[in-house]
Image 1 (cartoon, rainbow, N blue to C red):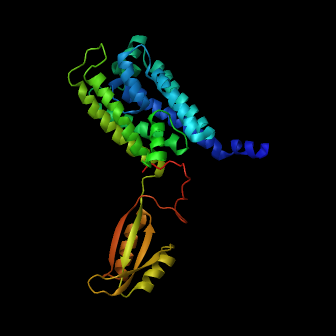
Image 2: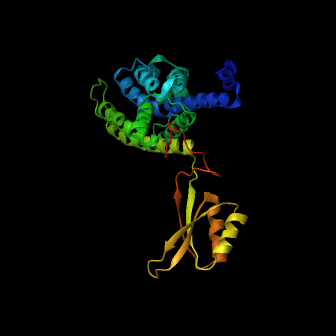
Image 3: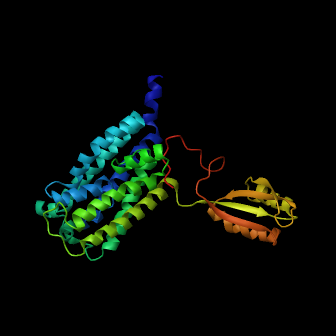
Length: 331
């Protein structure tokens, strides 16, 4: 391998766009925590959710600083399991996120006391105080976390923490990434319920009904996990269409190959009632093409039998390339 082969990727547009996406993903995630999650003691799982729990016990230490404390051993594991190239991206993203959180928090609160209390009434002068609308804070914060994490993971890095746990579950237990995040986060939410909800291990007074924050936390986890899947794999699932037509096979073939400009597959089948041999057409189209296909098939053969169902992943010519062995799949 020559020096040119090593350095050339570093000056490609794709390489720079990948790192820019990682940076913006970390910034969006950090902003979601600082402005919509941390001030209301919502614990959306992950290392930073655990850090919110620890901040309630030790308020003099910022949430981002606890993030560093949790991330370091997990980063070492990531380096061992996923290799140096992946580890470099993860290390930078994981170190960048809590640092951005600390910087944003310091700038957003006017005093050290307000910062330690994470007082939403003093956050940016109270301009975005959502104390009386926790659901809105939960939804906005969760969407920002999902977008941020999704952008980072889509570029084959992670923000550290339970993302690494989820990737280990995906690699060795074959659990999809977003589901792995959900599983790993559940333990963090339980700790938040104990510390923030019931005051275990904390000297602070527990407000009446604060245990309900755990319900908001579960909502935040669900929303963020769905947004992660949306950002990584896209929102529009392809559609599988199965078509059985008695006497219009040639017209359907012309429509699919010429008008629709796609290919399809004939599957040999037998009618259970009649025992007659049939040819069933197996076709994959995009979501936006479904209605036009339905209308055209009705024009060709109003008696056709057709089934439409979701295809959550479609690989091959005209669709996504087959994933690499260690590539993250969120769905």
